[in-house]
Picture 1 (cartoon, rainbow, N blue to C red):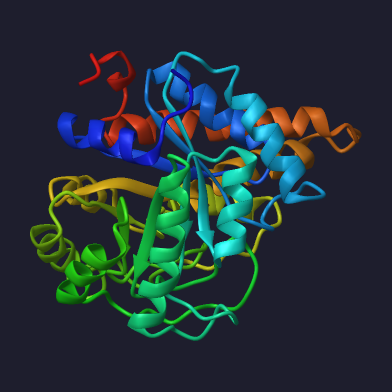
Picture 2: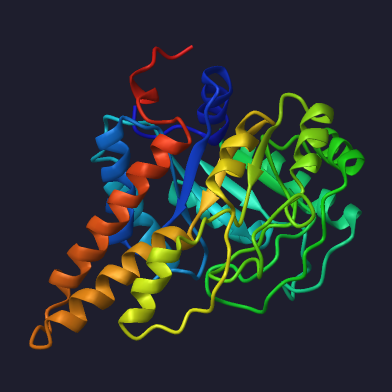
Length: 323
């Protein structure tokens, strides 16, 4: 039961009225944290990787190792998902490596800064959908652009909010299984300079898009909460993170009732991992073996993800009879 497609997993989430956390990993230690949390909570889960975003020497080495690791967790359904695939070639590479789902982010042109036209986005997304579906792989597209920086590389993107009418046309013309909609969120450790409300976080757009695209699952990107206590711990041990607000948990939970079935979260996991690593290094000045601080980071990340899986109501759903 290990590998499932994104469509299979999100269909189950819709039937059970919950959302799946989609957690970005940059190495196998973090991937273990995600999978251990899923096993501990009997939660289906989405493991995400970004091309060029790992600590490993090449995508193919990392991706192959991820596939092998996931195969050892046969007690929970796992989607292996490419996050923010920049072009057709990258999505094809991920499919060849064994990913069961890919995201083609056609919202940006090749420079990864300039918003693409609607027609450009439709064209590349439809091309990926045709290729992926032929191999039984799910596809997520994006409409509008999420702010911030993806995967620690590139320049910050401006936010371009999704248009509900365009979303309906986009789904019809591309055949995507899931749609990431820009509603004001941002990637990275700095999101909002004030607590988000209806003016900066446009959940009303989510509701309108869901009404026009029934049958296509919606995705919230850039949705980490950025817990103040984790930011404080990072800074207490040498970090310089500015004050920032993330997406409140209550808003994420509310979005589930609006058709959001996949909630992306990378920065909260990284904050938990890094805070534990910094604390361990600072309190043991003689240690030079990475194993100790990596174990601390893995456990801190696992504990946080257990809470997220319960928050998103996916905990226990791996034991629910499949439809």
